[in-house]
Image (cartoon, rainbow, N blue to C red; front, top):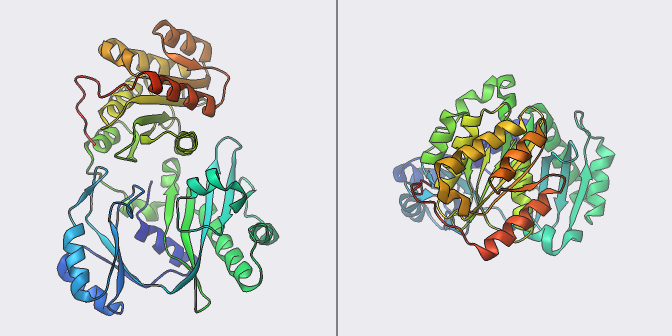
Length: 395
């Protein structure tokens, strides 16, 4: 479950993290009054779940209530990566001295949460990790229990912090960790955490992803369930699949077993120079029909030129996954021209591998996700693929 920024900040506030003063508005008329209550000059942020909204002009500063109303009128109703902007977050403008990146995400490869900290906040953290890895401090957290405070302080020291900044960053990380474990989150991220000139550390942004499989344990979040606008998302929802549109300029569709593995695969694609267009979370215990639908939905994503499937056969069955993939190849012979790499191992792996190989699918049996992505990028270099006939773009 991917929360909007304002929802994440509501959780932050409940956990004791400092957040900017703000209001959510849904009409231009409400914008003028909200801006006035917040001091006149405000930051206006479109509430969408896809990244890159700033570059798309969906984060702006308005100098006065009249300007805020004008910006609100321009933003509301805009479609961005398949999602219609229906809500705007108005916030006070912070007087920022320095920006940090603070994040906790579940690392499926190691089975533990990982905490990240950088003094290069406010920018694409994947770019920081790729170009200046030393600027990103990292520590592995316990799987199920809160980390000791000294571990968080040590992380801050490794990032070059000291004094009051170190103590406040440590405290924010501690509260983020409490939220992460309490809500069965997959990601809790603040980018940027703003060090203000008045000595406050404020969560200027919020990214929170909750494990869908754990939502029954958190009925208080039920009212936040989102009915998507994107036809691909609506179709995925019917089959209990989780689809997310990522980048309108992307060309790679990601299908994986679990949100954590989806995110890890996406990060690997970006790190190796690819552009993910969408990812689809299969969840657990899928049927061949669900796998076939997952392929169909991904094929409908605008701009798709290649697909990577990344599955561990624990709850899912590798042979069932292969049956769904080959069913779409039978249905659409043109699909066989589209670059496709499948990395899977686990339950019934040999049967699954054998079936896929009969159809000429590139299968990664014992290699890494990075190797699978590299294979796909090589295929894309010689065969750019494209929209498969019969599957018009839906997002």
